[in-house]
Length: 218
Image (cartoon, rainbow, N blue to C red; front, top):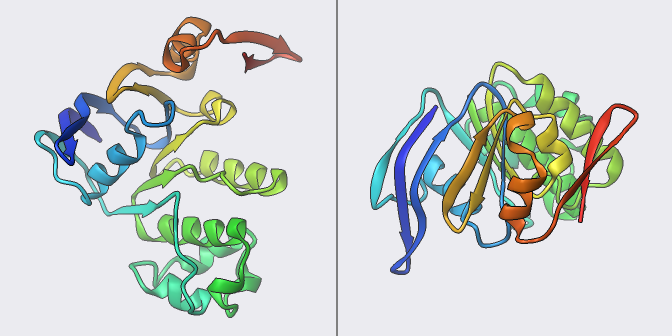
């Protein structure tokens, strides 16, 4: 999947500026501070926003798990069947441990449970799956479960916008988005450096090693 010179305006303001981005099968993580254009980028890829300029080359069906959602007064099953997930939703419910929720009313679920249901729906619907802050509202157990699932889906192109640097460390490809521009992209070991993360977040970021794993702090 390739994005070429993508520029997007919202209310007359240029939000994305000549974004060039290469995305691969597996897990792609886009890091960026609040207001950097991450959600606008996802909405442009899914087709919700029309770019001013540029090109988005995508093969396969696209699906989207947004950061914000409403508590629809309908069953979980009806939520799942409201899109293109009719054939495969059960597989992803089982993978995420959600099968018991199938006949529950969606509006009665917790924020984290709703998020996981919508993630399962997106995974069932698309070959290119876009997720905005998918770990937000999840407890530590469900965060770990979701990360394992995302890391195992090598046949799909998963695109995650997040602030979770630990997830980015495990990704196949990482991009850094600041003020509507990509300032770096590539493998995690190339992109997740003290210098680039400090530039991205405008704060001094330090990297430490513990038991063979790297961690970042400010």
